[in-house]
Image (tube, helix red, strand yellow):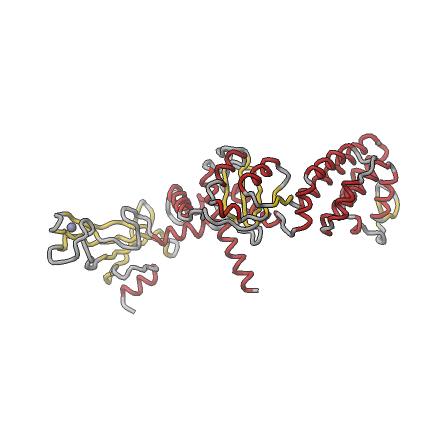
Length: 430
Ligand SMILES: [Zn+2]
């Protein structure tokens, strides 16, 4: 391996036109930091004049050098720079001069491509930008710029959309237009498609109308939580899509109603206060999961008791509580077993004794029963978004509050892309 080859391999330089002489590595103080400085030369015969485009001939002549200092990725923990002597040429056809260009840096830029790639790679991990900047010896604004540019390079394909979409929202950064930002992904694989600053109807309508009519009409299902503006939006922009309510949110609706009923009952009946307070989780537990054979000592009951006996005791105290509990269990069962008959029977023949909290929930369920039907008849859920939402929380924490929404968004997309590809690789390996 030649001298130049060794150094090019070490620095991972792809440009074969950069050569190195024998004593090309120096140790020196740069900006008061002990650094490694490498001296290289960029020289080759250009095919044409960079200005007028005239093909190379004897009228394009060498015209000295221009040296620029380019930031490299650290070497053995030291800041590293390349002083690159770039050959200049003079073109007699247009009477102008030009300097040779290299793939190592963009013209008029002093940060090498490997450094930019390193920034991008680091940004795909859950790491703060200040840390990335320090580790790679660049400024915070360089890190910002690279994250921005990498994200702008990937425009959305406005003529295609997945068949099944998941909609969700998350609490955004302070600078964002709306308090909640909107996020949507492909239900089949959890791939994040985009983030919209503001989840309000007018913003989302404008956003989705940018997609072609064919792309929008190709959407068959959209999974959402019970947020009415999404329903209006879907009818307008995805005319052929069925609305699917997320399973988790349906169960949450009835479990909250049951919980409110319990709390009200608990406050009205102080003698059972402790029992209701202590065993609230058991009430929400699916009935078939209650253990009837294992006995344990309960301080509230002052005796050995099973989970089943506790529930039987609490429900026997009040018929309203019992009916409310049964309704909750039935709805939960219907969703879990994906049984439409059970669900319809439950909402069509409710007990008069249901608590007023549960009656409100029932009203919502009846109102949205067509969408709940879609939930029961399809396997789609918003569960795939859970990982993304966790990532968003981490990003917010490491960034100490993003000031710019677009920056925040770029970072989410980069990290998601990275984790998504890792997951894909793992799945392929299995
Ligand atoms: Zn020229």
